[in-house]
Structures are given as structure tokens and as C-alpha cells.
Amino acid sequence: MMTEDVLILAIESSCDETAAAVVRNGREVLSNVISSQIALHTLYGGVVPEIASRKHIEKINQVIEEALSEAKVTLDDITAIAVTYGPGLVGALLVGVAEAKAISFARKLPLVGVHHIEGHISANYIENPELKPPFASLVVSGGHTHLVIVKDYGEYEIIGRTRDDAVGEAFDKVARAIGLGYPGGPKIDKAAKTGDIHAIEFPRASIDGSEYDFSFSGVKSAVLNYINSCAMKGIVVSESEQMVSDVAASFQAAAIEVLVDRAIKATKAYGMDSLAIAGGVASNSYLRSEMSKACEAEGIKLYYPAPVFCTDNAAMIGVAAYYEYIKGVRHGLDLNAVPNLKLGER
Ligand code: KG4
Ligand code: ZN
Image 1 (tube, rainbow, N blue to C red):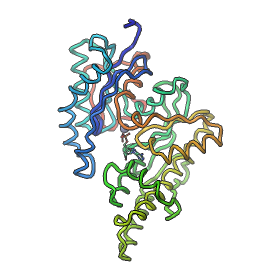
Image 2 (image 1 turned 30 degrees about the vertical axis):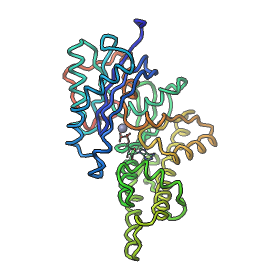
Image 3 (image 1 turned 180 degrees about the vertical axis):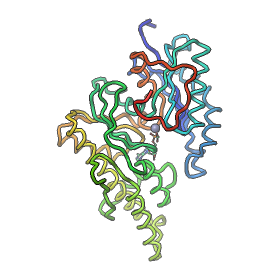
């Protein structure tokens, strides 16, 4: 192996996936191993933090070993260890952080702590070699809904955010209410394909005075009210496949239209010619198709990661870590999990 290669072993354990990856020179993913706990948490209708932490402890060594062997490397070839240290569930984050510190100490390898959202945005670099800052980014996940200007590698300006629920959270709650279960996003995406987006007019929220902020609690409540008003007439929405599809399609359209509208406005207002979408909800098929249409009409180049790089994974952490690493960012063995870490903080 050429000595100038920077090989990063990255670890991600901020929520319900235990993940490790090896990334070469920031853009080439040599391995990307994900052990998902979805089946386990489905029993409870959502992520149970205590169970997530315990499962991470059980899986993490095996996941790292697989990532190294799939990449056909050993720890001797690794240049640096990267790990998500926030935001996320504190107990879950701690498992990855402790593991990364242990390897860093034992192998005398530099340690780079990564912000989870920086990882999501950086997932766009993997399959798009031409994508370089500056660009606008819409980050949509189970915990975040942010409009960000990526000024340079590792330099972010947050220009809009949700005032209440994250959009993924709204998808998950609506899915539960119409009997689709957890995780809701992909299930609504699928059910919506056979539904009518005009079946029910759900509200498109705007925030007075802040044109790039979002609110999703209103549309979520409107869906719950609709279900209750049906129940009062003796109609159980979750028992009718067509009604479930119609609610899914109408809700999805309401949520996604707002995302597309704000993202396009921000990209233009900040003079950006590219927009990259990121996070679990970026794999939503309606978001992708509506955003593609809008970007084409406005002459904006649209980027989005493959679905496997949209939901939580460690490859995106390895990519983000590379750009931090070459800038000289290093963390000490006092690195701690920061559950509410802000983007751009070190
Ligand atoms: O990025 P992610 O894996 O974890 C967080 O950092 O939160 O995002 C998970 C979220 C969940 O809310 C899930 O329902 C949503 O992404 N999601 C989707 C789709 N796939 C995942 N939402 C809408 N449509 C999808 N196809
Ligand atoms: Zn995430």
C-alpha cells in the first residue's frame, strides 16, 4: 500500500446502528459494515436507549473486525481512528467513543471525533467526486431538519432548522398512528405510492419572519385529528388499505413540499449552484423526485447519497473525518460523548 494514502477506520454508534467502515483518502469506501437493531426496537415501536447501548457493546468488536477484513487491511495499515461523538443518545455514543479511544491508545493512532450531521452531509462526497464546497445542504433525519451552507470542508453555517419535530420524527409518528409501525419513513414512502396526494389537504407550515425554518408538529397533529374525526364517524383508518395510502401520500406531500420550497429558496438566495440532501429522509423517493424537478427548473445541480449512505453508517463518518484530519484536527483521550453537540463546534 502506498504510504501517502490516508486510511481511516470510522465508528458510528449514535442511535440504533452499530457501524464501522474503512475509507481511503476521504472518498473511497473500502468497507461499510452496519449492524442494525431495527428488528429489536420494532418490538417497542421505537428506539429504546438502554437496549441500544447494550446491543452496541455486544456488536462493536465484531463489526470493526468485519470492516477491516472486508477492506483487506489490518490495524497496522490504518492512519487514524474516527468516531461520532455527538449528537445522539449518550449511552449509545459512549460505546463508540470508548472503543475508538481504546484503539487509538493501544495502537498510538490519531483520534478524530466527528459530528454526526457533518457525517450525513459528507456522505454526498462518496459517489460524487466533483462535489466540492461551497454548496447548500438540506439535512433531514430522525433527529434533525437543518438547512446548511457548507462554506468549506468542515465549515458550516446553519440558516434554518425545525422549531419542533424533525421531519423523520413526524414520518415515524404518523406511520405509527396509521398502523404502519416502526421505522415509519420507508413504510410511508411505500404506502404513499398507491395513495392520492390530494385526498386530504394537510397544512404546509411557515414560520413568520424566518423563511428557512420548519415546523412539523402542525402537520402531524392535523393527521392525528383527521384519524380521530374518522374514528368518530366509525371509520378506522388503519383498517383500510386505501385510506392508509391516501393519508400517507397526503402527509408526505405536505411535509416534502415545504422542504423542497425552503431548500430551493435558500440555495438561490445564498448564490449556490449546488444542493446536497442528506440524512435518512434523503432516501425518500418523493423528496428525491420533487427536488429533482425543482432543481432542474432552477438550474441547480442536485446531489444525494445512495440510500445505504443516507441512513446511519460509518462510511460517512470516515469521509468527514478525512477532511478534519488533513486540516490537523485531533482529539485527545479525554474525548467525551456530547449528546447535544452543535454543528461546527469542536
Ligand atoms: O439519518 P437516520 O438514519 O438517523 C438519524 O440520524 O436520525 O434517519 C432515520 C430517519 C427515520 O425517522 C426514518 O423514518 C427516516 O429517516 N427515513 C425515511 C425514509 N427512510 C428513512 N423517511 C422518509 N422516507 C424514507 N424512505
Ligand atoms: Zn443520522
